Amino acid sequence: MYDEKKIYVFTGVVMRISPDANHLQIFFYPLDEARRAVLRDASGEPAVWAVELRAASQVAQDGVTVDAFPPGTIFSIGLRPLRNGRPAGGRGKSGLFKCPPNTPPTTDKNCDSVTGSTSHGQGALPQPTDEWRP
Image (cartoon, rainbow, N blue to C red):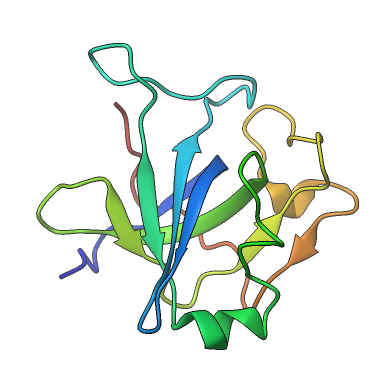
């Protein structure tokens, strides 16, 4: 289902969370390299990606809940994209880092570099093997 040869690392803004019994999904807007604006698709609409995590009850133990990641939360995560090319992927063993409120990382950095960021689950952000472009 996932392209195991590719790893994307995103810093994005939470749009919404879908807490399903089987998999919690975070829908988000990826931020540009300057970390100042969301990326847009060819029609000018904000690009939306989704990352699939473990069951909602499992990731809640890591502090990933609807209440802890409300819309507007800035976070960073590595994911393996879907092989079919749709804008979604699986977290795998990647770390997930949440920036402090209203504190995006600096240009080309991720939330793990921001003072006061929090880690949610084990693991570091992986090194990307590819980069997604709208």
